[in-house]
Image 1 (cartoon, rainbow, N blue to C red):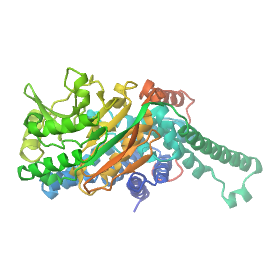
Image 2: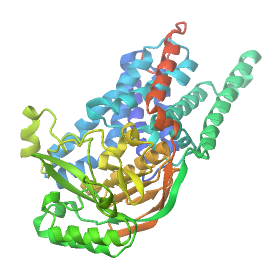
Image 3: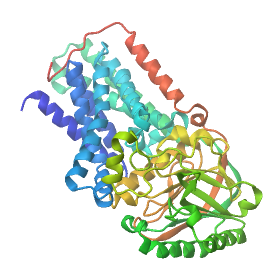
Image 4: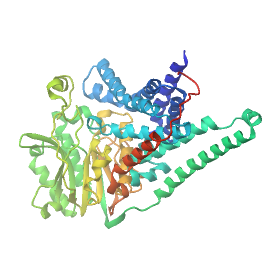
Amino acid sequence: MNPINKNNGLALLAGASCVFGFAPVAFYPVTVLALAVLFVLWQRVATPRAAAKLGFWFGLGLFVSGISWIYVALHDYGDVPPWLALSATLLFAAFWALLPALAGYAQARFKVSSSLRFLVVMPAVWVAVEWLRGMLLTGFPWLVSGYAHSDSPLAGYAPVLGVYGVSLAAALSAGLLARLYFHMPLPYQARNSPRAGFTAQRRLVGVSVVLFAMLWVTGALLRDVAWTHPQGEPFSVALVQGNIAQDLKFSEDALVGTLEMYRRRVLENHARLTVLPESAFPLLRQEIPPRLIEELREHAKLDVGDVLIGSFERDQGAYFNSVFALGSSENSFAGDLHYRKQHLVPFGEFIPLRSLLAWFINGVLDIPMGDLTSGGTTQAPLAVAGQQVAVNICYEDVFGEEIIRVLPQATLLVNVTNDAWYGRSFAAAQHNQISQLRALETGRMMLRATNTGVTSIIGVDGKVLQQLPQHQEGVLQRMAQGYAGSTPYVRWGNAAVVLLLIAMLTYAWTRPETSPRPLAGEG
């Protein structure tokens, strides 16, 4: 096996190992070490093309291992044949692996010293392509490296610069480790190197260690900053996890049992705010039995509270994935209290390039309500249970820049989700980890009501305060608190970190050119 093939294999393994940095394993040092390996491999090759290959193999390992649950959705619940589901999953991973390949190519175009490459160019380029991934083709920011640090000291950067700021801190850490790898003096070097050269090398190592420590200590100190403050009194919440199997969810034979289960779970608790999962009632809202609606409404009013229900809606010929409110707050407003999902999932909720792909979506995939309409980006928070609630449905909480649109007005975040599409994979745990970053970024509690898990309550510090076991029916009850105020991220959004990346790359590009010298591998 020639050197470049060994390097590609190592890049593939490093990318695949990243899955252990994300939930449910959540051993966050793995992602930093894996990225450091990629940076070392990039430094060892001399051409942009070779660096792009390494980036592609790293990305392929990352996405194949990290989003393998797409196969479950396609095959187990979309009725796609195994060979086609596997092919589609691999092609999807290979497509997104092109962005790490772009990062490898781009960093190699900078003619700078190795120190500047490790500490400025590679980290900034890596985060820039992660940000680009969150924008391209409606965005796919899943497995952004910052999410792996939901419970690490680096999470302290989230309220300031968002998840991409956490990614940047992690990438800078990886760059410092890669720099140490190349410059750490070995024992034989200490004996045989000129004294001045050895001293300079030792000083470089010392500076790298100090910078690494400062980066992590600063993040830990930022975690203790109270960016927002409590507003109003604590209130009781109940989050219902129905545990309806995906293959039964839209079955007419199971409908009566589903509605009765949710009815019973709502009536047996007296929380001020009760939240049901995404499409808990697998019907159009207009088709829900009026007697059931009235019973839930009156029960919520007894507790001077509200219940949020996931369902579908039809309005003027368009269909929406929505959440609507029943209870005391209805009396205070003339209009209907509902939220309609605005960021739809391609192929799952709408058909891109309809004229070319409609045959595949409608003829091959078995996805109920797979052709929905966006609810729009100007929807206000729902005024329920004495709070201003920013509702987001399923995949929407992956986009931090969209969640902050209703802040600082919103006092509470609520995510309703149905991750039953992904069976017993680790998709639901990854999704819950993403919600932790949204709580950190906004300084708001996040309540998650899901069909099969992870149903959880997340504090303003991003820590999971309580959660239900997955794949079990149950109700999570606890006191919650509304919050007011703005974090820096709420004010700046992603603009701050993007400007920082531009400044870093501009600085490196305008430095005097230095011919890169690979230390090993392909030229």
